Length: 165
Image (cartoon, rainbow, N blue to C red):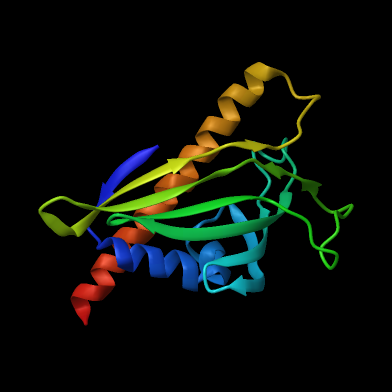
């Protein structure tokens, strides 16, 4: 998925990286997010729990995620995938999702550094073997799109907040 937002790329990146615990404030599809451990200034472990989907048909998922960011040219890439951590074992409360390698790229628009081209490559196995594929084909793309829309709306809010300063 991709979109252009009227916010500089560095502002979006700093918001993503520095405010992980705030994700549920602007994304109702997340119940809880936290940084477990900063491994280096560019690499960390985090934990997140998603809200149930499809009127409870899909239970909440949790995941321990390793995240790394780096720059290539003027683009900032944030890549992440599932990991494990002893203090966060799978629990009976949630289904442990598998987050395959995926990520975001934030690239300033050529000639307009106040705007950012955002790309998201998404690949998660939510482990729903008993739910028919037709049902999943209705629910999961909408949930993915909703997450991205919440992200874009949050980015627009960052722009409005910066204009007030």
